[in-house]
Length: 449
Image (cartoon, rainbow, N blue to C red; front, side):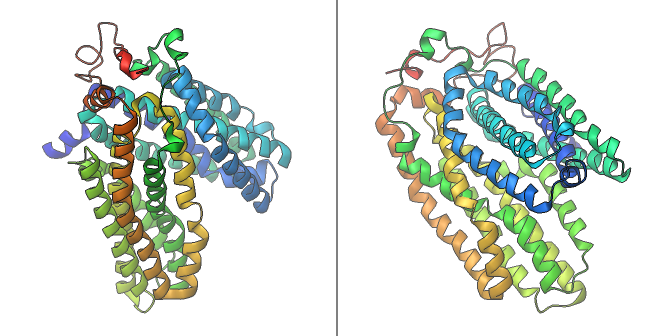
């Protein structure tokens, strides 16, 4: 009992505040997303094909603006851009009930995605900037638990709204989400400033010398392979459920237990999976563990084609558990890569570049994995596992290449400051922060050589 309570405590007061923000975001987003398919078809009046087309176009738009949004974060500061994104999303949700055609839906979907990308990039840049180096991965793990808890509560709220089968209640769901996002935006503004939020207007105008992230081939490859690893979500949410329904004798109701298991694991186990992950070597070890779980999931699942009864149920469930393990260990590794392999002066731009390459690493997976598993059976599952093994081998030299690039083009004192976290504490009152609760601004070397 005491061990459970100890893990329930955040690593620091700041991590606790950031976790509340994660919960708020996921509560609002989860509530709307749970009923979004019904909302778009029943309230907006769209066909399923129109919904899919709109989401695809919006996804392309988010891909195109990722790098420019990263530059905005570097230019104006991560906390300000994060709060602006949250407020913008809150404002846009207000108008969802008034959309009644495809054109309006498309414009809204694109706008939501673009503003969301700004928030994602700013959030990642802010958390790396503000959290002490020795707490970054543990704090992000705790926030990940809070995020999943928020999505669970949001799904429950959305499910309750759907249960009433009322158009009036469905129209009120976006307004509820808007209110939660507005609270979230206010909450973000009350967080302490990170070092890059404290730059003066004159300092922001200084051109950072040296090449940007698009010339860091190692970073681009690392984030591409990370995207490949994140295809575990395709396995989790698409391929295994389709396999269960079409290729096994397992009851369809098992799907509910599978997703329930994933949710519980992602709430309670991120801290355990992140333990010991704090730099590139330990992150690579976590990648190897994640890939092992991924491959095991493929091997277990392919055997369920010929099993029957409770054996099938047990194996499908175990396959889902192992692919969730892949998700948890990959999360820990990706947080360490973000902290260790980005130019500390260009965290927004690096996050934007990562948005491009990680998308390329996983956008193909739904079609390819589904085809391989459903049409080639055991051979297809082995090929899916083989893709992950190849990516696991190749990410090792890519991280080394990314690190050499930083050592060649970023002043040594900048990298040393980043590894030290530019902080000495994380309680928002002393150590990391001054008396006003603000993280001290970066040294001059963080701005220009």
